[in-house]
Amino acid sequence: METAAKQLLPNRVFGTPDAAVASVNEALSRWSERWLLVFDNLDNPEDLRDILRFFPASQCGSILITSRLSGSKELGQSIEFDRMEKEEGLQLLLQSSRGDTDEVDAAEEILSLLGNLPLAIDQARAYISKRQLRLRSFVTEYERRKQSVMREIPQFCQYRRMLPGEDKETSLSLLTTWEMSLQLLCVGEHAGELEQVITLFAFFNPVNIGERLFSNDADDGNLTTSPMSLFRDDDGDWNHLGFEDAVVKMQELSLLQFSHCNESEITVSLHSMVSEWLRMRLDEDLKRRYLNPAISHLECHLRSIGDSDHKTRQEGQAHLDTIWRDMERFSLGDDFMEARITFGSFYHNEGRLKDAEMMYNHAFAGYERALGPEHASTLTIVNNLGNIYTDQGHLKDAEMTYTLGTVNNLGVLYRKQGHPKDAEMMYKRALAGYEKALGPEHTYTLETVNNLGILYYHQDHPKDAETMFNRALAGYEKARGPEHTTTLAIVNSLGFFFSDQGRLKDAEMMYNRALAGKEKAWGPDHTSTLDTVNNLGNLYSDQRRLKDAEMMYRRALAGYEMALGPEHTSTLDAVNNLGLVYSNQGRLKDAEIMYKRALAGYEKALGPEHTSTLETVNNLAILYYNQAILKMQR
Image (tube, rainbow, N blue to C red; front, top):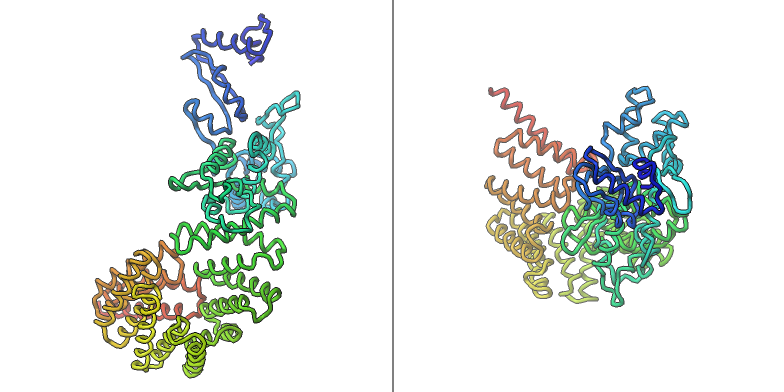
């Protein structure tokens, strides 16, 4: 203001800065001409609190404030510039290049790497210009030169500020700007702890860091030293309001953005470059120390969300992918074995079988070293690996794996391989052992009884199969009740059995009982409920009730897409089933769309040689044959 005062009133002497401010306000308030007063880089909250005293009382002028503080929006009409438009960013980066196709592609890649952040793009341009780099070369070198790029200051940088302890303005780089914000965050109560909190955020995927990642793990002893313990009271209860106060302060300094998912949960998002910078400030030992609570928080979170909605699990996948990259980079030895099991199970449920296999292999190696090859925990991992290999169609690997596990699982495997005699021998051995050790009504016994029923069904011994199914059903009804989910699973199996035997009314009765029970126990959109919906669709299709079948398949498809995602194998099964219904209805174009979607999904998820893939190929071949016949008839 003193500079402005001297320009407006060159002949007046001002004794104090306040006198200069008052004189400028007085002069501008009397002006009848239009004027513009600019407050540039108003980034300190203390400056914002006093800004109103610098505003002249006049209707003739305009005031422009540039600030990174979200609170500045309350001063008047605001325009947010958080990301540079793609066309502007490309123009800035390509102004000194030859503009060939490769350079344009490289420029677009740079914009993506920098998250379209204007200051970062300008600094990258200055870095590239000074070193006379091609844009493609910059993309290649970016990972190892990231910190240098963020420190680069353009020669004629207009982003300047008087830093504390200095007597002249300094040009600000990206890192300087964020460091200033972090210094302002670390003022007052819990100063250092808030820095640790925002640093922990940087170890998750920067988009959609939900509050429940941290609020549902009070009983986990591994998290007593987590930065998030700041938001727990003496009883271990989560302090939502305290967490909200902290993220509000961080947003005020433009370090993150937050939103309310509902009244009781906050979701935080960091710019990808801010996340990079927060990690870049740490040495390798500190990165490992932050990674440990991040893994534990995510482990608790993934266990707690169970069969949540698709969006919640997609966010969980994004965080797991981010943390897993760090787990691979750091040598964590045999730490976090239980977390690896949780992560493997999560990937398995999401249909990401290769990632699940990798997790289980890491966990198996750790447990085998720590506990030995025959410990129960080691064998549990072995069993999980067997399930993965079976789902992948690697039956020989599964057989080798199950040999180390349970006799009952070997029976399951032999049944799937088409070795019924071996399977029957294993089931009977398991059944005799369970009956002797646990009794005829123990759930392990009943599980094996049910497996024998499935085997006899596949051997075309329907009477023996029905006997086993009925014994399992009666046992579960007694042990767990008629509406228990395990009981309902047997009811569903009986429906499948009756359907295959042509006893369609009995099958429909069983499916409807299972569906009503599952809807009551789990809700209409649970995946197990949807499995029974899909089975009813199969039944109606067999009865040539195609409208009813279509309705069931559509419900199953919509539910699977929401619960599991569009590329999960259960979703693809429903897609394929719809294709069959459309084909039977004579809607060949609709059927073709479904078959092609199912085929592309199966090839990606299961590979080109998997039986589900080949069955869909066969369906398409039949469809094309029918289309050809129709053309010939015309």
